[in-house]
Amino acid sequence: KQEVTQIPAALSVPEGENLVLNCSFTDSAIYNLQWFRQDPGKGLTSLLLIQSSQREQTSGRLNASLDKSSGRSTLYIAASQPGDSATYLCAFRGGQTYNTDKLIFGTGTRLQVFP
Amino acid sequence: NAGVTQTPKFQVLKTGQSMTLQCAQDMNHNSMYWYRQDPGMGLRLIYYSASEGTTDKGEVPNGYNVSRLNKREFSLRLESAAPSQTSVYFCASFPRTLNSPLHFGNGTRLTVT
Image (cartoon, rainbow over all chains, first blue to last red; front, top):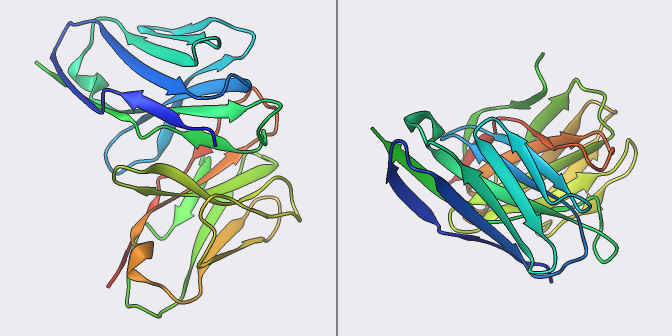
C-alpha cells in the first residue's frame, strides 16, 4: 500500500527564515506530486504540481522538488512571512501501479511563522 | 467564479439520523471526489466519480452512499449517522487532464452525537 509521510508534523519559526518541508512516498511509480496549503476552517488550495518527468517547480517564494529514486519531495519556502502560517499537505498521484484517479495525501505539516 | 461549492458548512446530527451533503462545481470538470479529514489521519477518500454516470469506492466507503446527479453535482449521503462519522468532509473536482491540480470546496464540519 502506498504511504505518504510528512515531516515535521509541526514547525514554528520566526519571520524571515527559509524553510524546508518534507514529503516521502513508498513507491516510485508516481505520476505527479502536488503541494497544497490549508488555512484553518478552509479547503485545500493547490500550490505546486510536479510531474514525474520534472525535478522541480517554482512559484514566487515557493520551490518544490521531486526525487523519484529516493521517494521524496521537498517544499522550500524562502523568506517566510506570518501570512505563510497554514498547514501544508502533499499528495501523490500514482503511475502504473496505482489508480491514477486517486490522490493519496500526507498528514500535513502545520507551520506557524511568528513576527 | 464559484469553483466547488459545498452545503451545508456545519451540521449536527444525532446517532441514527440521515443527511445528504451537497457538492457542485462550475468548472465543467469530469471527476469529483469526497474526502473526510480527521486529526492525525490526513485526508481519506470516501468515494469518487471519474465521470458522469460512474462512481467507485475509495479507502473508507462504509456507511456512505453517493450520487453523481449530473456533471456538476456529486452528493454524499449518510443513511444512519454514527459518532465515528464526525469529521470534516471535503468535496473536490478534477478535469481529468492528469497534470492539472485538484480543486477543493471549503468543507462541511459534521458532528454526530
